[in-house]
Image (cartoon, rainbow, N blue to C red; front, side, top):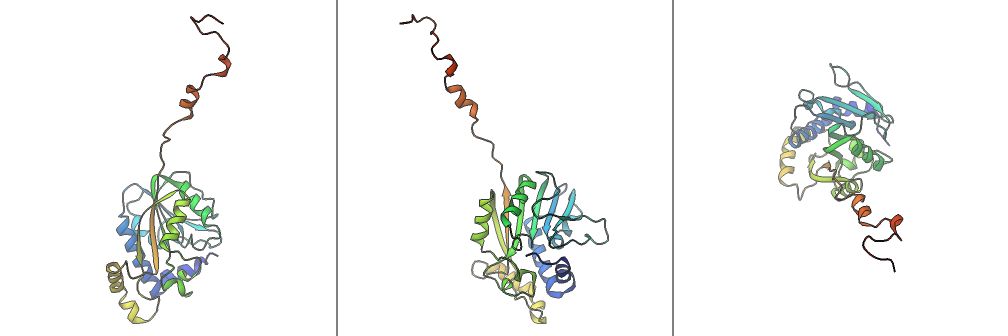
Length: 248
């Protein structure tokens, strides 16, 4: 079940813990994808808190929000580019998107496979997506006071298997949110230190949120049916005399 857009907005923009989470995930996203000129960047779910760094360089930046969640205007102080959409029918032409970010759009869906099919459709050949989900082994998935405590958490193996099933090629992954999901001042004040420590200890320490980058690879067919057809003798010629050979 999708969370309400007002609850998501209040968490990310009006609580200190939400701002800490927003900064950590956004910084990791920008480290993976530095802003590039002329690209079409789309966010689905409630990905708009992560997209602001791309507004200056991208050709267009669009925030898609599923109807069960609701929509809010974004970005603040500029022309609105947020759109309310059906979960598996986005008003975007096939192959138009260069970069796609999914936050609170996969783990809360009743039909994640159909969402992934729509993600694959809108990406152009070689396009890339980053899926941000609660980590099954992390603390954030166990606390309902944050958006990551709702829906279906994933392990890395589960998410990569799901992506492959829907024709994505997983490329790389990262973990973020190593500090506990606590409003206490100590944890909030030391959140940046926990992120740095988690980066060093990532193989042994589980972050609260998993980020997996996947690409859309479209391969040219290795052969066509024409070669097989030409190799087969045409049945309509069967029984006709061969030139230079006397019939028996």
